[in-house]
Image 1 (spheres, rainbow, N blue to C red):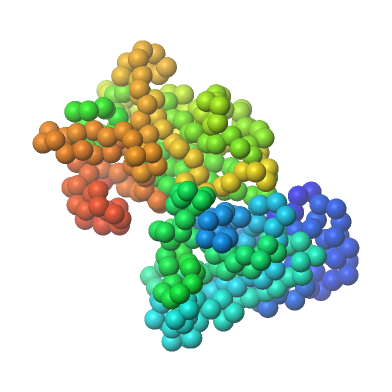
Image 2 (tube, rainbow, N blue to C red; image 1 turned 180 degrees about the horizontal axis):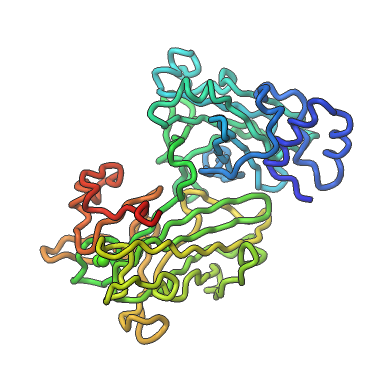
Length: 434
Ligand SMILES: [Ca+2]
Ligand SMILES: [Ca+2]
């Protein structure tokens, strides 16, 4: 039995009453993630009835010493409105010594609560703290934030989350949005606390829980000729690392194109020990370029998401046809301690475009996400360049067929353009499928 964060909390709940018996079990070989059940200050009474932590809604990278990913922080919501914040260390021989977590509504509130100073955030003053002995080798710990505390600090469903850890390596770690950097990653684009230290935090939308991590969308023609509707292929994606597994789930939600596509991902080989299907499904086909695996998730997006009456095989971009339920596929990567999971850029998604209209026949070309690769742009009729593939870090409503993206989203392509949906009637609502 592998003990994950979810099992850990279950053990905490049970072990508080039957400490000795659980201690014995928890210290059996293979159970050494379970040693944090002592007297966690953060565990409130509601935990007594908790049997497992719900599936996380979001996962952020836990970054030590500014540049090194050592694991993840997961956030899940419970049926009583409580939040589960789980630290998971994935780097070998690194253990949790202290965790300090808090949720808050604004920097001003933290200042008023004296949890922040000129030196930055003060983890020791965070509301949910716990400490562990080095010999306990704790790699996973879940903080439960009660509903009453969540509701006190959330504003319209949004809450900010600060998660600090002190590690057995002597490093401090914080969780947040990461970027590539020469030394590994940077927290340059993470939400930064004011003050002298490099403390960071992240935001969480309680109402978006259950949504997907990313939406990828493409204009699928090269050079001239695109109409800017960014619905030629729309794929939503979720990634979840637990223990020695990374489960990736992909949903084709729209296909507003005559061209057919294969949808693939490219991911560094380091630390990947097996590529498998999920939930009993077959393993995906893959190749390698020597340093990356190239995994074919959908061979033909037309076959995966068949049209429903549209003569040009388009799906979920025109309102006169019924919604087609998304095509879903999950894959599982078995990973070891060499595998680095950057939650902000988990892999490179790309499409192979088949102008024949039927993959894998005829000539083809590849289009990636500009945000990830800096490659693949097209030019409109007045000579302005735009990316072929874009990424939106959540569920996203794409434009209707032939509607230029700047209609519904006038800020495109400025930073955070997707936050401003000015005209929902120009976009497709997947709730039509329900
Ligand atoms: Ca288009
Ligand atoms: Ca289109």
